[in-house]
Figure 1 (cartoon, helix red, strand yellow):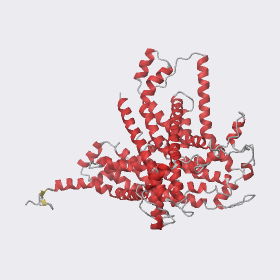
Figure 2 (cartoon, rainbow over the protein chains, first blue to last red):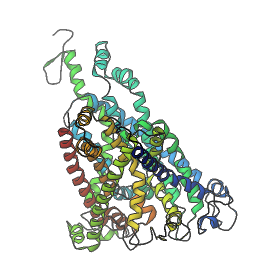
Figure 3 (cartoon, rainbow over the protein chains, first blue to last red):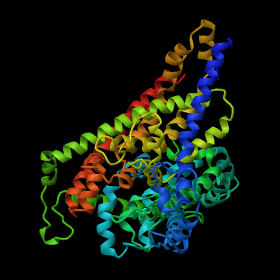
Figure 4 (cartoon, rainbow over the protein chains, first blue to last red):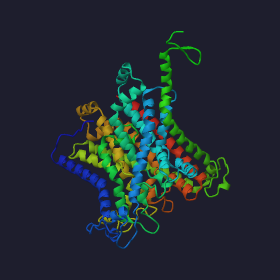
Length: 292
Length: 312
């Protein structure tokens, strides 16, 4: 669609421009303000957080960050939670493990689904896709029972396996959509040159889809990082990822707003950095490759 | 028999070439094996769960375990709490999707028009998109403090409104969750529709310009119909997620106050992990699964038809 604009007519254009500017301003404030406010909250002492009216000017402190990282806490509400570095490490271990396993299974699977024809191919592809849309609770309840029995509860391997429900369907559909973009002629040429299927995969398909694989890797990692509901019941204190870790600051006795804000900000740092690299592909990733 | 011919297990003559072809026939299954193993690992718990929904499985009372056929589902039908959760789940999803699509269309049109700093604005819009929903909810929970110390109430007080007990009152809890959900997902709808706007053909607009159509007329009779497949696609993804919304509710109200925001997902979670009634929890989960499946099936069909109609 062309970015049409009616020919200028003095005052009308001026009003229109003003309205558009106001809309843009509103959009920016709406998007950015929550980040700004959580940053302020993370720098506040407990009494500043609950001050009414809310304080814009206060004496900033780093004690919330120190509390979540090294458990050092001064002042009124002493409650050290030095386990946040562990939660962060857990998130990295589980997300990397889940994405690695999904790639091991997903690369050959999506190569088969992109390049070969066989019975029940589309049905199989849609079966994988359907996990993306099933409510997580349909898996969480039986997995909780199974994991307790199998000794997988509160372990990295258990969580990595559970995360396959998130990362494997995603990896298969994204990689398939990238593999299908490679023209068939390239593959035919390689075959005529005497390449076996292995040669075609490792010397043609994989090198040509490296950017696509990088995008799938990063987005898969980010989706695993965002996961909250599986680890909520399948992980314990030693294996909590940051998403479950951040909510631990809310308890029946008290809510540690400042520390929770600091933890929330730290938890999304990888997301904010990684999303810079894959801006163009986020929508494609969120729609499992349906929207290019 | 020639040196290049081998007898296969069936006793027929097989040339090396056709043996290679036969191996090709098996190849996709070989490639799929690791994926299929994981798939079985996913399907097994699913069918186990479906089976549990037909039993009276209490985690702490294993001796009460019985196969009750459709007993749990019949119980659901008579339960007013189930009726409320079902109504709330559907109503929330419909309202959320309508609001987010309408606002998303506005934002997409804004991003598509000639404005200063469009690229920066677009990049900013991506920030909420990749946030963990539970962290998004915690961020808003700070701002939505029910007293006068909450920044939202402070801002509203300039207009003489409030203080609003955002997440703590039956009237506002669902609205608050809708606001949080919209903040996180409006960029998704906007970016899909923006992609749609940028892919629209020029010809109808040129024709409209010649005919001297007004801005609203162009939008109503050209842009909107052409954009229909994109709108339906965005709505499909959003409605499937809105029916299953969990993280935001868990981090803010946990289904309260007084069950006001208790959707099917939350209720299934409570049944299973608060009352340890795994059978009832799975029954709730299966109803939700059917609901999501029906919604996606209907909308996907609608989307396919719309996409076919608008092909130019």
